[in-house]
Image (cartoon, rainbow, N blue to C red):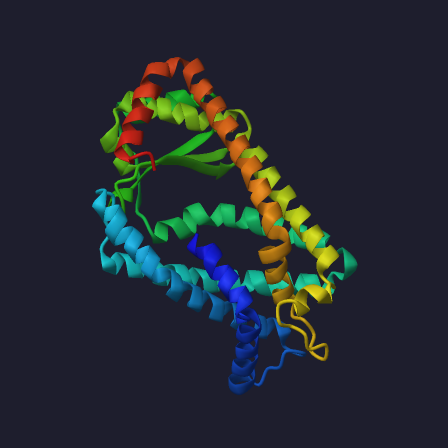
Amino acid sequence: TYNLFEEIIFLLCGYIPYCWDLSCHVGKAYFGWNENDNEIKISLIFMAVNVIIGTITSLPFELYSTFRIEKKHGFNKQTPQLFFTDKVKGLLLTCVFGGPFVALLLKIIKMGGESFYIYVWAFTFVFSVFMMTIVPVVIMPLFNKYEPLPEGSLKEQIYELAGRLEFPLTKLFVMDGSKRSSHSNAFMFGFFKNKRIVLFDTLMEQVHDDEILAILGHELGHWKMGHTVTNFVISQLYTGASFYCFSLCFNSHELYRAFGFNDESRPVPTIIALLLFFQTIWAPIDKALSYIMTVFSRKCEFEADKFSVDLGMSQKLQSGLCKIHLENLGA
């Protein structure tokens, strides 16, 4: 709710033109850049300014949510030091990955001609696969510790279940989620014949081994029934459709004038065109599609539940899900 309110206020008060002018001033004063010859560099300053301002405006709400609401219900385990350390790491990762991504995206749009959306689509696909590859093995370990699941009956049963379903499980990890929150979860990742499963240490404390196995039966059901691949394909189609629609509005100067960019002697920056398109024209479409995806997501969840039930784990799935639902207060 606050984010929507903030976006409306920023749009009505001319925040975006002001922020762009500020970025141009900083670029010219400190680096000798101008918006005509160095648009992408100015755009990176613009993004940096927005990230900093967004971090500052959202910080009070995040602090209240973490150290008041989460603590009130017994979920929060992290210290203020860990909270701010995570913030710094997140900002650094935004610079390392977000900066080059935005720069390449803008370059492709400017050089791609009228069919730039096709090249953008291909670029975002490659970037998505790249991030899906490195996030679990490079980025997530910067925030949490991953240790192999200790030898024992649980590990043997999980490998046996994976074998029954022909799931190419190569590694089993336990993640120290308890150092931040008492919320519990389990997930899997990996491509082709190199799949891995991660269990939160909180999950192992809240439910019994056979209930963990039933919950994993649910998660493996998503994989076996192709939900993971389907969601990835849908996300790529969504990206392609959104950038195609953006290409139809890219040269709509009426849109930009409506939000303060009415100086025809200055070209409208590509980053501004993107921002205004996704905040105004595409926003209602996104809401409608989000509702459809929520309905589809629930369908997939019920199918994964049935998959676990068909494996003969009905009672343990029920008791396990009830336990984590109660432990997480339905969150």
